[in-house]
Amino acid sequence: MASGLVRIALECDKEEEKKSVRLLEEPLWRTYCNGKKCGFATKRECGPKEWNVLKAVEPISMGAGVLPGEGPETGSDGELMYMRAKFERVIGSRDSEAFYMMNPDSNGAPELSIYLLRV
Image (cartoon, rainbow, N blue to C red):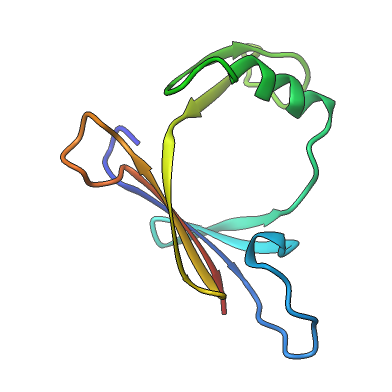
């Protein structure tokens, strides 16, 4: 994010036959970062390791940092990077939502935008 604005788009397919599901409950997403396809994402439940991370950052209201990590999901030096911020949620329709990271130090433009789209 040091290079400027970051836009992440998550797209899922709209299937006519499927019972209508809330957008945040879609199981599989195509991911794009600043317009470039960068893979796939899947919905999953929080496990014990994820709950430990959430408990560790619970007292932090805003900021970024590094937590000491354990296991293969951490970086090469055994640390886990995190970012905690306030996001503004905008619902465009039942097939589109956006989350904008609100930075109190900037001119009001979000540094990070996350778009969820059902196409």
